[in-house]
Amino acid sequence: MSAVLQVEGLRKHFVSRKGFPKPRTVTVRAVEDVSFTIAPGEAFGLVGESGCGKSTVARALLRLVEPDAGRVLYRGEDLSTARGDALKALRRKLQIVFQDPYSSLDPRQSIGSALVEPMRVHGIADGAEARRRAAALLEEVGLPPAALDRLPHEFSGGQRQRIGIARALTVEPELIIADEPVSALDVSVQAQVLLLLKELRQRRGLAFLFVSHDLSVVRWFCDRVAVMYLGRIVEEGPASRVLADPLHPYARMLRDASPIPDPSRRAELPRILGEIPSAANPPSGCPFHPRCAQAMEVCSREMPRWTALAGQGGVACHLHG
Ligand code: SF4
Figure (cartoon, rainbow, N blue to C red):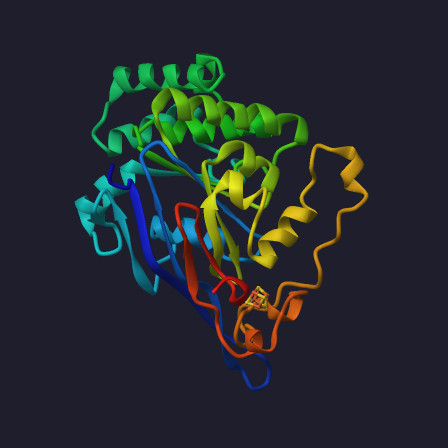
């Protein structure tokens, strides 16, 4: 079956002027040559430490930040070059759920209006029919239809995230980009929102790009996963393999630092070694080499090539070249 989403060689650099009295140009290489595909109904996880570029990838797919290079294909149609109505039609099929539901809702706009607006803009429904659909969507995400006439500040964080999910569903998307969708919520609420996302995925056959720093959540939610480090994918494959038995030393470090449900093993967990380097001044060769316990002489000189693993994804590391 053809991919819902195909990302090829995505790149995004942020250029700014910094310093006083002699400002200099600083280039932050947020995303470098990122490629992956997502199949219909598949949940694909993008994981890594804060600042690794995963949220920039999510935004660049929808051109909320304009990529510098690469292609993003939705069912073969190129989002990166689409304009006007063609872009609008493609964006309808890919919807994003943000980390902070409050900042993505207009505090002066009623929930009903926030849900009806996208349906009207995309010509799906208007007037009483749009309001009826909005009420049904609220019920589907576990909120009463009476919420239509209330304002965002009248809801808790978890309820606001449910509203954000309902709003994403108003335009009947095929793929949801969930950018750290529960990390701003209380732990007690996180599981409920994750369960809702999983139910929606199954009921509606939705595909997901699930961006998270939390490996245990990704392990539970995703079919496949890519691990990002300093703007690049360093390992990709079935979530069951990558998160249980990763090959890349960075992916192993992340796995070992992730809480696991076996209390007897927690005491043995090593801490993540060192700080993530600046994407404005990435190390030579393999960008992970200053933190890698298995680094060899070649690692500081040469960027490792991508090595495909039969049916199991791939890895970028000289140990597996
Ligand atoms: Fe470590 Fe070298 Fe592999 Fe990079 S290429 S992860 S430094 S072993």
